[in-house]
Image (cartoon, helix red, strand yellow):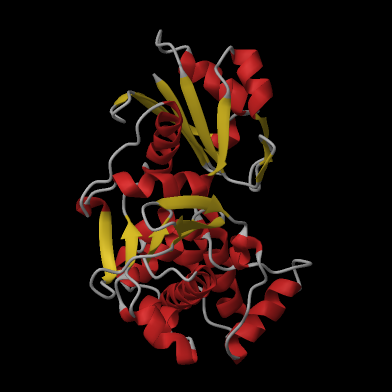
Length: 331
């Protein structure tokens, strides 16, 4: 079997797949409840007698020489050390967005929501952006026959405000952090930061029930839910600004990678706020690049709905390294 993993700051998903990427076993773990990846892998592999012949793990952080210190999780992952300790074949270690990019070719139409169809027959480089616990970006280089995913750490590039309100947001964040990256604003925790900025800067009233819900639960989930339901104007304003900033950075990435083949928006946040993503704010910010607007309007933009894309991509990478390529499904 092929061992595949998607290691994130919140959840770690593991799977065993056959050569056709059909799952034999999958399980999700809460990352923060475990001391390290080895502990999670031991539990997972202890549930099967299958022989692992190839393995690939996508991890949320920069990968260098088979090692990664995860960005939003206190884990250090060493592929060679894990292979030796657990008796596994050599493990391929990829950035999680690179793994997600490897999964895009096996997605079907039901896994995608089209925000912008782009021009007919669009081809060329593609780009991938994802907000979740953190903020990830990747590119897919087009060689004229197929796409080759590559990792970036673009989510940690400096946040660039576009107007006075966003400049005030930057100042608000600089009071807390030495540097302010896009991850500080376009991520789950970033949505919470935007909410706090708007609440404090406008002296908007925070109802007691809302403060209680945010204190007792996940504030990001509360903000998104109350914004979508329309019961909190302040949460609605925060989510609108978040979506606008998301679109702006997606447009930045599209220009930097010349993603004429299209842009994919993945990550758990986009899935949870899909009604806002399909509204006008995201695309208007995506297109709003002055003289480059026609170029961006020609690029297809799609939201990835399948939360298993990174897991499938890691499995596909391992399968391709061992045999014939897995075929692209019709979108």
